[in-house]
Image (cartoon, rainbow, N blue to C red):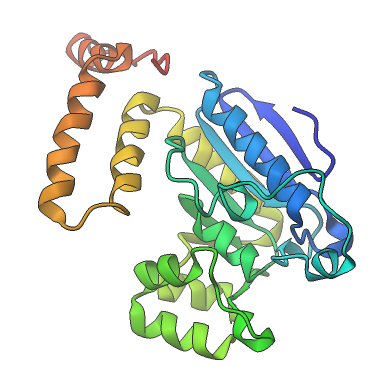
Length: 260
């Protein structure tokens, strides 16, 4: 995969994606949204890729969010904005492979929403987070309202979103909008360690789990979601990974996952 505004690297079953506009703190414009959408499409379709790690270039920023200067410049993008939303993720509910956000610096506005659109968030001790859109007359419309209120509770989310204030990594961990905080120079190693840990379990089972989690956004209640889970588990039973997991357990050996 070759792009102008992001970098990609494969390590075994892991795809590393780096938002690569450090000169503007990895702010995202339309062409970058589209590149990221294409990257996630390719990731989803590649049977040999099971987990992705997303980070930002440089030491200061994961992403500053929406590139307002690019928007104001009037320069037309190469093609229309992807329907899959901010960073190709915020409105994407069909990606069944997990993404780990390695937040290496500040994640502001759409940058925070991008991290919230991932499945696991690891933060550098230098990371900072905010949804400051109200300060410039907007609001967190790229899933920030919905996701942050689900993760930290409505009261805490409202206070952050109504004031636009910035929180540091320690407060983010206390609130519950990051999973772990690590020393800055250890962040990527810890993210890769987490990704490798996820590669030891059944990729088919992980995809089935995320399919049900994605579907929760469309369901009205617990009963509907549990009924849907029963349908998904029947699909999972037809995979080679399901049979391999059972056989490996019975035979007391390590499973050989094939992601199909």
